[in-house]
Image (cartoon, rainbow, N blue to C red; front, side, top):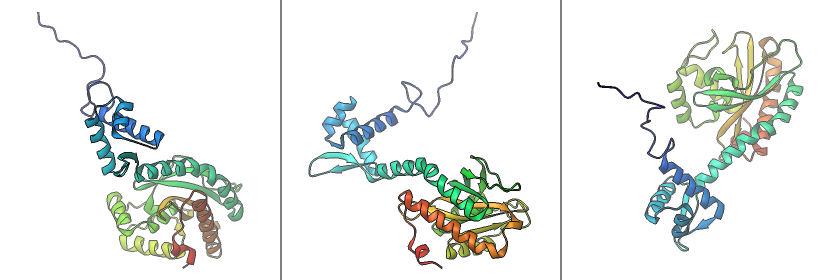
Length: 278
């Protein structure tokens, strides 16, 4: 009698190697990188011995890490050390881990200055994701819990980040996401959106009026990394009726100042054009 043996457990993934559910080559690479980071610098022989690898295998992994900037080689001493990309990756984690902690008191001051809910968000692909908020005491107010996502082109924070990106990067993101319409005020054509981004870039803060939700407005500014590139954003949001034309300039300056403060406290660099003003 023929019997079919039933498969047990999970099927083998084409993205795993033999020996477990992880990529063995990636395990080895990360192990080598961690060892280099721990000891500072070491020869190929010492690293191979520390990781239990054949020197030829360790050398292939290290040269791959070197290609991507995560490892470097000192030809004079014949030693391997951590590369600049490893530093940048670690710095990005520290910035992100510290962003909420550093930003929270600044959000509170911004809320008190403007009387509106203050928000902190980070870009994720073609969207911005809320990571912190300090609500106003007004009974009618904006509320965006942590994890809330908004499309960049219809968000005050998103437009502030887009405006400060290299133009080719902003265009690539927008082409990928498209410009879906949410309200009659959504900037849904490239001409209108890029004109708005140019105004945002010139003054240092964005203004989103009823573009994502009818009756809600937002003023945002970018937060920058050590290279002067936007890595997060800060904003205030609330009912459009409270965002009067006489208040927008004051709101914009307060938000931009708060963004610059967080940039400096997280080790970022405010672009020179913003320091000089429009």
